[in-house]
Image (cartoon, rainbow, N blue to C red; front, top):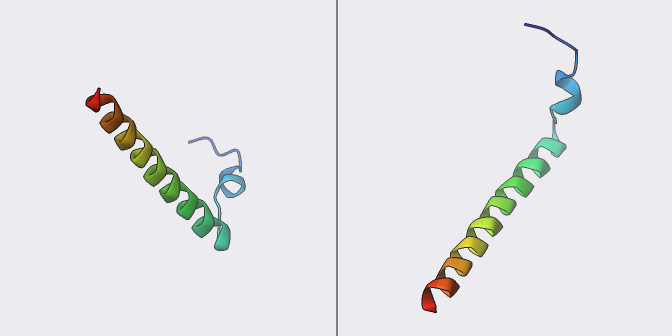
Amino acid sequence: MIDLGQDNAWREAGTGQWVASLLTLLGWTLATTVAAGASRLLSRG
């Protein structure tokens, strides 16, 4: 395997990791909610 030494540059640690995980979870929740709302709105017509 080729190692270019970029592993630590892209891997968050500590508080940054928790913030990134929380924002990802919130993004998935928002996207799911919007998709469900759009689906319900389109099925009414």
